[in-house]
Length: 288
Image 1 (cartoon, rainbow, N blue to C red):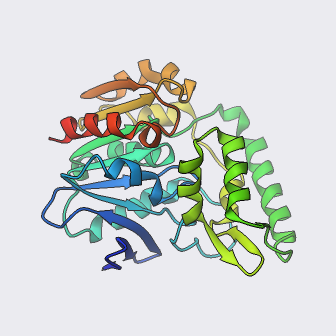
Image 2: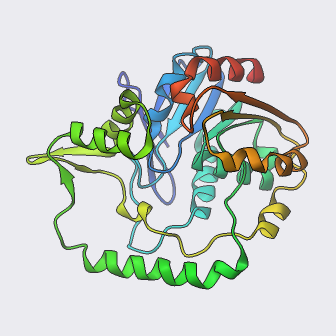
């Protein structure tokens, strides 16, 4: 079910397993682009870009545990594979098939893996600072599993303690600027949706488990097998100051995608925010 909270352009989706919130820009008569944000971001991440894509509806959802979406129930470790199921369930309730699925960072990882497995469900794919699921050597499996369980045991033991907060959102914004280097207006835009006010200041709205290690990561062999022979027309946008690992992985990506258009723009990992106009122009030409 799709429930709208216009005119604030808030939307909510009641899926069989969880409730997702998001934001929707544009009118119903326009083609739809589904936007998937990155780790610890939220739907606000696409607000700057929506200004340059006015010919479309831009539907940006909050992943579970982010923004105004529900947290996954229970206290078990999280795993990125769960987002694939979220995406599949979401597409099933949308009133129209998206003209394109657009993903930044984690959102792009999920979108690329989903497209690889279900190419018939995706018209076009837009990847921003993302290529494929992360992978690591099989030799890391035991240490990753042990570390993840240790972190979650510690988290549960401390769960009764007071939730960490800040005296104001300004303090949190400064901390994120210092940690990530992302410009102050964009840090504020993201934190306004990932935090909530209390009588003492602001606290995190996002699920604290997001900051803990997952218990398992795929190997390169698994990722390579998944990503083979993707026929969907794909636009890849990277920032010149973005993640260097993406640049190094491009030769692999060219073998995975049979119809890949690559572009390198001025900007960092959040190039869709810092350089929204140029990103918007590329997307407009690609989707049209």
